[in-house]
Image 1 (cartoon, helix red, strand yellow):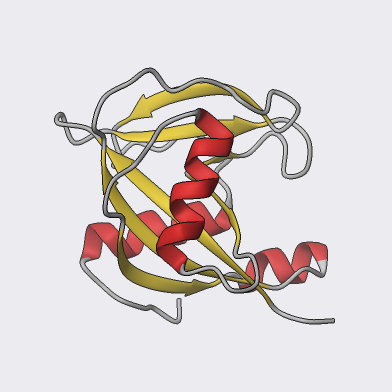
Image 2 (tube, rainbow, N blue to C red; image 1 turned 60 degrees about the vertical axis):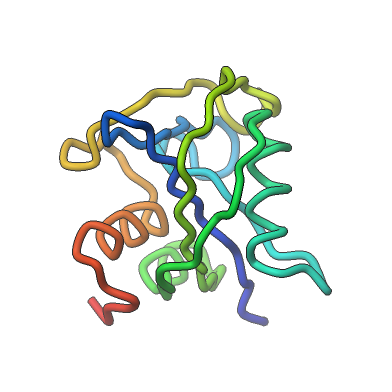
Length: 139
């Protein structure tokens, strides 16, 4: 068993809302920010840009790493241990589209203080770090 490194990307619009998706396959019915696993030889920023393009068809500019989270609850529940590098990107326009309907069934812009439930652990951790301006939190 190895630890998997992924990215989670908060995309924020001019109203302070973040873009969330409702998962359909693995991790259904959880809501989550978007992201995915880092490929060998890929930077965190490259991964964020690629995953957002693949998942919702948006091109993000200059995503910035702001934190890291260790998703222990998911490991306890599923036996899969991920470490998420958290990035922030400003929404630059364009219509987000469900590029992978087999993985995600719905998109919403959401107030980060009023997250829909159930919410995926890695996403909740990433949003909490961003809101509290923390790089890492053990809890």
